[in-house]
Length: 395
Ligand SMILES: *Cc1c(COP(=O)(O)O)cnc(C)c1O
Image (cartoon, rainbow, N blue to C red; front, side):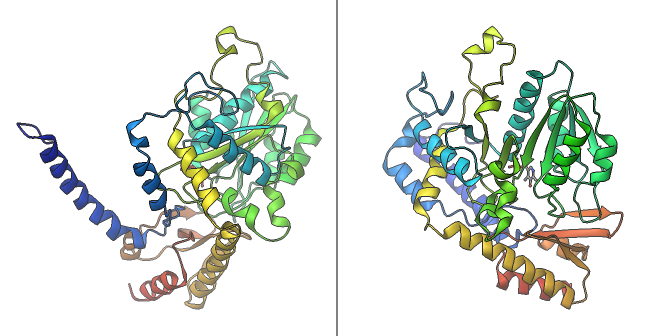
């Protein structure tokens, strides 16, 4: 820290030098970051040009309140946030007049609202405590959030390729308690999607007093709706009938800081205060009061400045490159697997030198032994894949 007698200019100079050193390191590590589902092509420079030129950094903006209502606080970007929500509501097949949503802090923030709103909706239908059902291979945020919201959690077994085991779900589903099912549309390690149709069949057959379905589509929710063919129906509310969906912004869409999107139906939104608790009546509907105005502006900027077919091209190329990686690993004699429509390829764990160089995450699977995975994001192109394959055969 720069204490002592100095001018502001000197302090800025010292801080800049320190940050520049760190930035060199970040830039050096960025090309090999292929183990995590983060798009390393956020491309936000033009946005910052506008931001700085407009002098907005001298204003403290805040999106406190409901993005679809007037806010008591004037310095907000709700107008832009609402347009972002409307774009995604349409993309995910929600009725244009019967949805509600907001720009979240992250995929986890969206999941937190899925569980919170789910609990409230279920409470409006049954006085009994709900049980959260989620596959053991779903993202750990669900387990943590069940703990945060003090809700019983039932982990359901997963099949070898990572999908929720429907027979185990049927066996464990309690017909006497409301069910809050979190469906993984893309598990963290194997990139598996749970079968929503089969899950709903079991719910309708075993008839718990009420049920609520939240889609954790943090990564896959970004690219699925832009793929050709029926696969986009998986994230269509109209076709699948789920109650809410959470998607990360910094994963597929690419931002320089974490954010996300949460969309639910108007019906769910109207039940988040089932007992008309007085102190909640006029309250902010989101769990956080203060929310980033900048995140919504960045999202809006990206949606409005990319070419109309930009995301469709990117989505197609993620899948094509994941197939390329999968095929080339197998050609090199490495055991490798990929789920249908997934950009995640998992394979026999390579040497520690490779794990470290490419910051790969590992996992041990009952069926396949020690594994690592690569999440093929926008920056993982054929050249990078070739480099990886060449390294893995040498190192
Ligand atoms: C990344 C991820 C999350 C967590 O999202 P954050 O935006 O990192 O908070 C949750 N679920 C799944 C399936 C994910 O891939």
